[in-house]
Image (cartoon, rainbow, N blue to C red; front, side, top):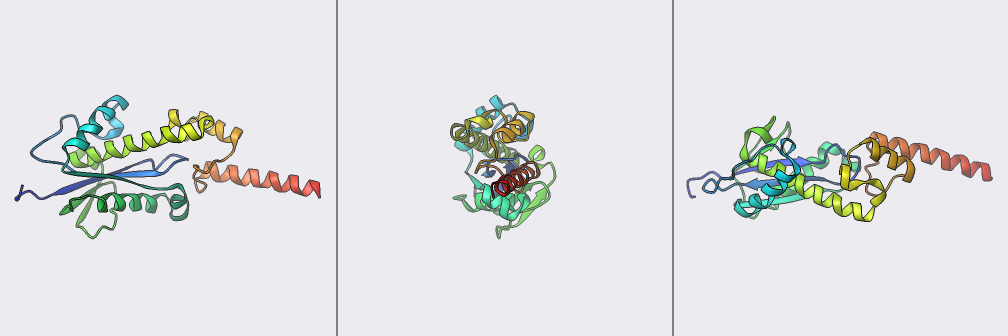
Length: 204
């Protein structure tokens, strides 16, 4: 192990949804204990991801999952919130890597030499592992949120803007878990505010 350069793979999940936090994972794989079947989490079935996630957590030299919450997404924008979640994940590792490899175009500021790799989740095993942990952790969290907000259907769409989710938003309004800076939610907040002001004015 002394001659091995510890490389950390980083990826996110949940940039596109209208609700819930964005998650990020950082993983340092053990080169002496490889994991078969690693791939971009989006190319794996839910069953495959759920099978691989505990194996990654067991065999990795170090791993961490972190989040940026809905209010942080609305305050910072989704890109900066994603980088914040990534930074939190890297800094939460109990082993400091010598290099950070990140899926995509941008790297979080960690003070560690970093490289962004386009389609890195399909090219680098550690990034693939991170994509699986980020996705499964966020999905599990959205299942918990479904228990609190069952009428939105988070268990099915995980917060993504499906037709069913948009219909539920129109019917039930915007919850505390919705990203008010995202256009479909922002427009609904604006419409509802206008209707409330009209109703208030009519009562005067």
